[in-house]
Amino acid sequence: MRLRAALTLLLALPLVACGGAEEPTGDPNALGTPSESPQPSTRTARPAPDETDGGGRSPSGDPADLEPRVVRTVAEGLQAPWGIVFLPDGSALVSERDTTRVVAVSPSGRVRPVGTVDEAAPQGEAGLLGLAASPTYDEDGLVFAYVSTADDNRVVTMTYDGRELGEPDPVLTGIPNGFIHDGGRLLFDDEGMLFVSTGEIGEPELAQDPDSLGGKILRITPDGDPAPGNPVPGSPVWTLGHRNVQGLALDDRDRLWATEFGQQTWDELNRIERARNYGWPVVEGSGEQDEYRNPFVEWSTAEASPSGLAFLEGSLWAGALRGERLWQVPVTGDGVGEPRGWFVGDYGRIRTVAVSPQGTLWVTTSNRDGRGEPQPGDDRILELDLR
Image 1 (cartoon, rainbow, N blue to C red):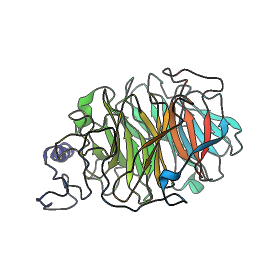
Image 2 (tube, rainbow, N blue to C red):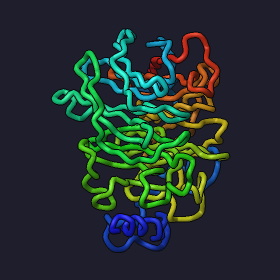
Image 3 (cartoon, rainbow, N blue to C red):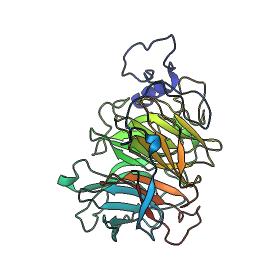
Image 4 (cartoon, rainbow, N blue to C red):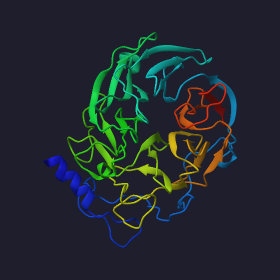
């Protein structure tokens, strides 16, 4: 079929690392076209070297000067909160993975249940996962959710009238689901297209399978159709070769970044570029093959297991589950600065990070997800001020 042949071309064609003697040839939009940005290639637990300066900065001029502090507990008594989406009135909707409940959280911290997604079938890492608001929310009141059902992972929409959620309407179905590695993050870009992160459900070969939606980052319209400009017309696949992406964020240059779980050795922070192959399961972390995109940051799995991701004040902020910390990664002109871990062990497992309308970070703990050690008040939403 045409989809399989075109995606297979993406896997097969070599990609030339920038800086070499060979220049890209042919159609610059074709599958397999080399990236024009530098490709890090050093396997370390430190960031890839930066070549230029610039990009977002903190008010002081240097993201390294930021000192995040917890200013309040927004909400507590939640159970494995997973998705957060802020609405125009300043409130947030928060999904709970295992209860399949969605709660509304007011700016003052009042928590109110607004519905459950009954078709969700939680197991292991699957359940009710990411949330996103429609780009035209003021007109349509639509909330998007990533849901694990008994048959698949899928993207659905629900209307929200300020009081309760309506019934889910499927938008994209047929994403593989399993006990582990279900992906689940949703993010709209500035063109109104929806990025969807998926996992390979513990079957590594799916990440390189052009017929599977598992182990991919997808890009679709709000109606669920493949987005215009995707590498293969008629396919939702934007990139492939992913193990389990649970964090997506756009920086101040509209570049897409993603956190990805490694297996035994290296967790990753990747910059996501159209049509690229990120190597799993052939490569974990950095490799020497030009056809696979190397990460910009690698962490040992004990330091990270990175999930939610947000961009604020010139830095990416990643929640670490097993690593029990909040990672700050300054973003420079065409690279990243030295990562720094905050709140190490203070709050246990950190799942989701989101930028509030007030310019603060909301961070969720995930100590009631079956792998943590719950403390009084868990799970919580904490508000962090960076200034």
